[in-house]
Image (cartoon, rainbow, N blue to C red; front, side, top):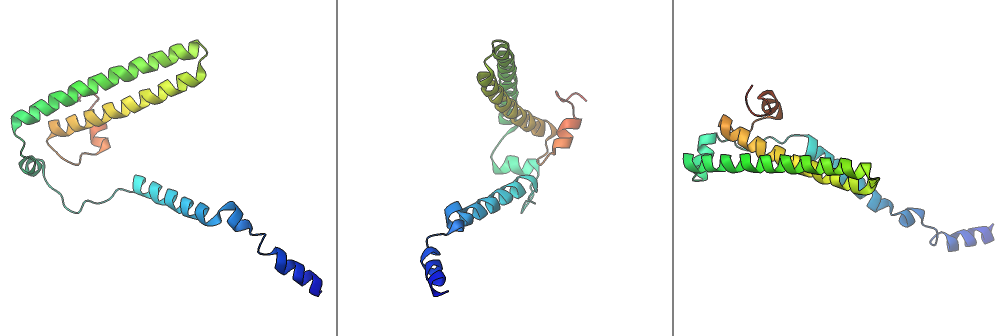
Length: 148
């Protein structure tokens, strides 16, 4: 019995499975991922709210600069949508040419361009509505080009 206990005492420090698989690091990574998802999907209440006019005063913006920014946002929105559509078309061509990996990469870039186009259109929507803190539902209900 003493021999078995002696072998166990000699081998135990060498066999540390949690350290081999990095248990602590895996647990920390899982906690970080959980916190990331919570921060992405749970809206944070702002500490203070300001109106559109207050923001204009704080940022020293006039109506002319606001109109210039609206034109810039509209131009950027159109550029990003056209670029995304061109990339989707090119991705379809790559699929037809049996370049599957290149097609997926091209679709990924197209989706990034569509996200940028959404961002600029949403900012343009807020300028047109003269309201900060618009929701996605309000943007969606207004129609794609704001004509609803």
